[in-house]
Amino acid sequence: MKKFLLGFLLLGLLTVTSCSQKQNTPSPNNEAIENIAVNLVTDMSKGEFNKAANEYSYTAEMKKVISAQFLQEQIWEPLTNAYGAFQAITGTTASQAQGYDIISVKTNFAKAKLNLNIVFDENKVIAGINYTPDQEAISENIPSGVKETEIKFGKKEWELPGTLTTPEKTGKYPVVILVHGSGPNDRDETILATKPFRDLAWGLAQKGIATLRYDKRTFVYQKKLATADPEDFTVEEEVIEDVLLAVDYATTLKQVDPQNIFVLGHSLGGTLIPRIAKKTDKAVGFIIMAGAVTPLEDLIVEQIKYISSLDGLSANDKQTIATYEKMRTNVKQLTPNSQTKPADLFGTPAAYWLDLKNYQPAKVARNIKKPLLLLQGERDYQVPPRELQLWKNELANKKNVQFISYPNLNHLFVKGEGKSTPQEYSLVGYVEKKVIEDIANWIKQNHNPS
Image (cartoon, rainbow, N blue to C red; front, side):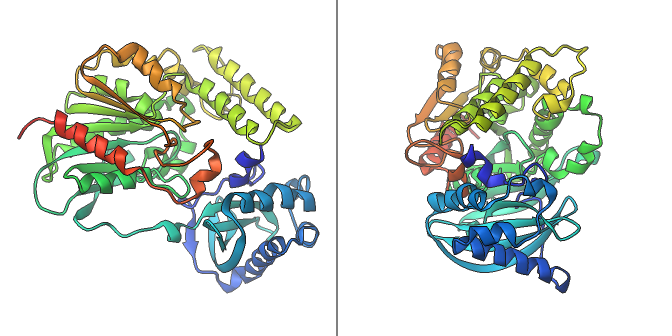
């Protein structure tokens, strides 16, 4: 499963994403670890893997797996295979996360600019290695004709910051509320080097349509939620409640036509659109992008099997798959009286799974009377193309529903070729213009005339 592990190689100790790190300029206090990080990357770039494995201090957990062969075959070669030849180190940045110091060594490869993140524990010993795209390399200026306004809405104890994106010209516009997929997503739904919600917002604004996007509750309040009662956490708290508050908030904005509010859900957000639609009468239409019908626990196992198959199944891969299959069984056997721990349920509380247990998205969607648009990328391995057919099986005879499929697009609706892999998310990509055009045209066909 090398292709899966490469992007987040922290060996169970720490997960670091570019969104959660507090960036700062290296100081004299971390000059020593900065030198270690640069030297380690330099050694690997020169093919000196034996030196890289043996001349630096690693934690006991890292020592269990670190070797010259490991650094070469499971870190460096997958990087160069995916992103081309190494070219240069261009600098460093320092940050902290969860009590660890992180030196991000900024590197240029032929096809991408990456941060190789070397993680140090409190004793300045290497506790992990991972990579993320260089966010500075993928940042862009707001396009002409587009205006963005910072907003804040929601319950007092769960207020969420966000962005209202509109055409620059003053007016009242149809608005699309953007609903994230799984995990603690920011307002752009940043997935490594891709920002799907930013792309949608800017593209739709250029076509006369506003959007409201916001940082997800699980992104803004990670620490607070970590200490909350896990049995109080379901998709209602994770997603649905804030979507409904966003819809209500949109009706108060002077730039928004309150008679033309649409809700767009991607991935998990798309799966939940039928539940969201049941709870609001203020939205005039709904869009599902890569929404799943198959239960989430089945998709998780399917994804692990797919990723493992990309470079052949090892004994470790088979063991990992067996572990995931056991967790899937645990999920399916849950009852309200179960005492199964989150660690045996994909790290998620039982209440979350019980809430989804009997949910059948496509069947619930039959009750949606308002316009409904479903979009699917045919290179999507996370929500496979067959999911669109499952929606069609229930909804094909409904006149208010439209389906569009895109042959070359992945889960993020970014164009590519061949089998989709996790590594392509690290390459700078953009939501295909045809997708934005199709959404804009559908909204214009289904909005309420002013």
